[in-house]
Amino acid sequence: MNVYEELGLKRVINASGKMTALGASVIDAGVADYMVRASMDYVNIEALMEKAGEVISKYTGAQDACVTAGAAAGIAIAVAACIAKDDIDAIERLPVSKGLRNEIIIQKGHSIDFGAPVVQMIRLGGGVPVEVGHTNKAAPLHIERAVNEKTAALIYVKSHHTVQKGMVSVEKMVNIAKKYDLPLIVDAAAEGDLKKYLAAGADLVIYSGGKAIEGPTSGFIAGRRNLIGYCRLQYRGIGRAMKVGKENIAGLLKAVELYGSRDNREEALRQKEEMEWLKVEVDKIDGLEAEVVQDEAGREIYRVHIRVDSGFLGVDAKHIIDELERGDPAVYTRNHYANMGIIGIDPRPLKEGEERVILNRLRSIVEDIKRRNT
Ligand SMILES: *Cc1c(COP(=O)(O)O)cnc(C)c1O
Image (cartoon, rainbow, N blue to C red):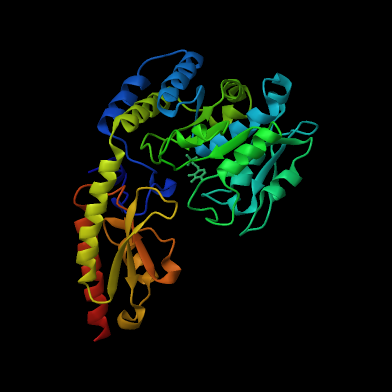
């Protein structure tokens, strides 16, 4: 029995992805052991935070890094750092930022909800979000025209949640940031490439520790030395409400180290093969048609999309999704396209053999439906 079953909760098979609602990631035994050891001793937290910056920088190519409670906290702290810098009065006054340069420019198509709105995290850090362009289209001129003496930073959000076309590229935003001498923050929460955006010229890049890196609940901001120093100072202000404990800092460092030395492409290809197997098997079920598709944001993730033939089965995808969740263990699928009749299976969070459990559940759900239909 796992801890959650001991608490009387249902076992969960996660086929949906790195979802906060399902506990984000499960960590490697080596990371877990490191966290337990870290939790049993005292340490000077400020020194640990600085050491963490050194370790993370080895894997990101950044000058320095600041550990955060997650990527959402990372947005708030990065914004606070760009606004309050090292001014202790301002740090202690945030998120009230009246009189300071506090405007943060974001493209409308990037103003997403990842579970909470990006713009709310900007406000939490004292920022005033300035949305520019249109939902489906923005031009460099929209950004440049919004720049004024109140502008504190530009933010670019890299995510499958954002509008995927018609947006100003990160490279163009780097150029605009340089032209007006403004910092560019990139929210790369779920991205797996820890170097790309820094190499492209972003000043602060935010990652979630619990997504691609598969660490504990945590995150970090990597970037320019002076700005990262300001980020750490925000723990004397708003950062205190989002502090990260020593065990999570240690777990993040171990996870980053493992992630940086692992062949992530090999793992992606293994998962792809697993999904190709599942596709073939699901295709044999009457009323379901499967396809292997690559991640919308272009990452090396290959998922199975199962199209439900509701004309044939007399039920829609949502019905099957509900049945999967109702069972024990509860199977959670990726439901971004449920309204189009598609159920997604994400290979990353699946434990060994769970793809077979999902297949068997799909078979029995469809059998039940067919029995009821006759
Ligand atoms: C998940 C996510 C976040 C929040 O990350 P946490 O580590 O859960 O705080 C922020 N931005 C984007 C684009 C995300 O996908």
